[in-house]
Image 1 (tube, rainbow, N blue to C red):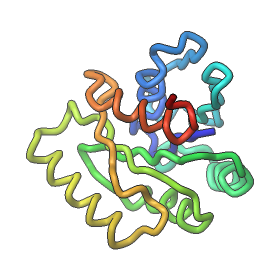
Image 2: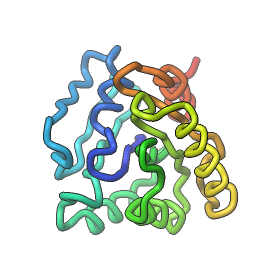
Image 3: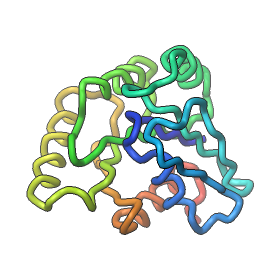
Length: 173
């Protein structure tokens, strides 16, 4: 199992759709309304593994977000990796600390994925990457040191993230 968590409107569903566009059994619906995912959505990727699309936190988050997500993360022993999505335009926000603290507290291996890189200038993107890398090296224990920068629109970075997921789920032959 791998799960995707992040603020409302960070692009979780769009990223999952882009990542698994080659897997016809993974049908992801994307709403035009930000913060539309209100419950956990599970997608089986063939016989290989399951992807969990978590509801967003922050704006329009479901009231039971913390209980629902915390319980799931704490009790899921077969969770291989949690992907924490951060919008490249705004970077890590205060609300992202909710997810970071959960991952750190439960000693979950997690990775930061910078989304919507097609909406950031190269200079702004470089600044965000450097700030997040500094944050990861100084303020986290369980975060994978390499972050992934992706665009669900242009598919930039998608192949690399897809390979990483295949590796952590034991599907890279």
